[in-house]
Image 1 (tube, helix red, strand yellow):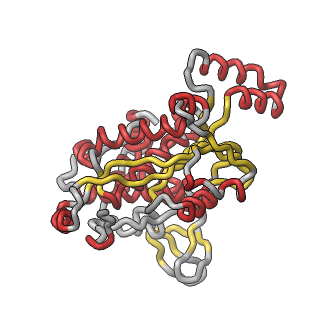
Image 2 (image 1 turned 60 degrees about the vertical axis):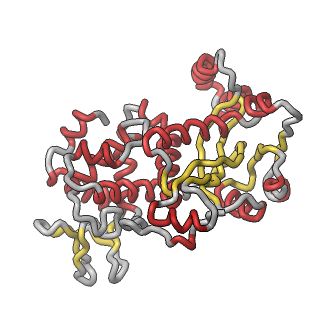
Image 3 (image 1 turned 90 degrees about the horizontal axis):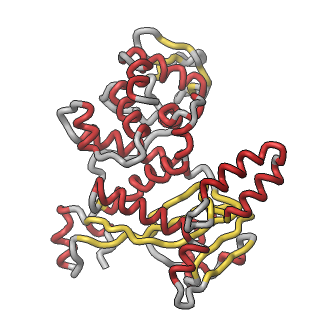
Length: 352
């Protein structure tokens, strides 16, 4: 959705209310008192009413906007900004675009949206073939806790551990899959893919990704996370780290790639996309946000992954793939766990 299209669809607060009301009704509005589903709308009150017990249900009850004092038009414009550009946006820039006088409400709104992006993507598992590796992202210790950190011998900056999982497949295998599934319609698709990868140094195609902040690199920690986010009937490709020793016992196949002094070949041939994703995401976050506070890194990763996994939607003219509508739908489905300045305590940081 382009900017002029957005203003045509949502010229007023009432238009935003009507749209969000229809989104909620399509999903089914559940009464928090008796769990009955209702579609009765109370005009003038911006609320639904339960037909069974008579409970009044505000339009934003049970959504990411719950308890927010910002208007729906403010939420919608922010959602449009976040979904209409490939890059991540800073809250300062969105505050400027909104003409908002205060920074905290804009920051909180964007963090809540990043939170539900992660909740939505956590529903899905990666499958077929995946690349997996660990990365390190620079993070900042909040100023309030720096003295505490320095007393324990740590600086004001450290690295967060991030598990990166990428669903990818060799181009030749992808072409064969296309042909097997639908030979009569595959010719044009095969031609487009062949042209796209011609001359590329990477011989694999990437589908979906996940990036998850982890506490440590132990096999126990990584096993639990990977089993949750990757389907069991999957081929997993990794380096020869001891953290990956148990994959063969669970997944269909575990391909271990040993460097043998040729790191470049390993990266380009076996684990290309996991490193491309790490580099692009790390550079993007650094360019816009700099070093982020430790407890907020996962939220920025959520936004990057959510957009990446829906990157082809931008090229579609089908309304069902509009990214704003996708985000509006999950905004109606999920509440957020994020609260303003809900910082962790100094003892919760691992300063070692």
